[in-house]
Image (tube, rainbow, N blue to C red; front, side, top):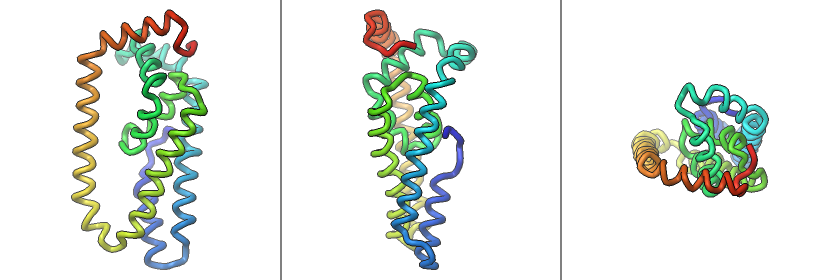
Length: 187
């Protein structure tokens, strides 16, 4: 719901508890994690849809979110929202805000729901079942793998940031043209 909680830690802990004690079934832990991920992001989407845009319009200029950049955000979610929602699930800081931004940028809910469900299933299910399968080896693997994933995520965010900075004027022009033609959802 847009709250930064250590979800990975909860899923890993529950999965290891399943492995050690056999008091919980890993399948139900995975189902609960997946359901929590999907439901939580749907609440985030609704929050963004109801109050996100007015808050961005009011306070956005204070942090560099001009009206053109807000239109650019709508354009990006309109054209690439599926990838943003799915891939954003795997980046810790981004995951907190993607659903709220998708709602604020007026991404269509059925498309959001589909890619939110796919991302949530892969992310939460992957953590739960992967942790269970790796068992005691998780601490040996999680350090190096976590570092590689973190470096890859940072490199990806840096590359996306450079791309957007380099192409912001061109993308904004395209977004404004679509906005003026009525192709983007109304604000």
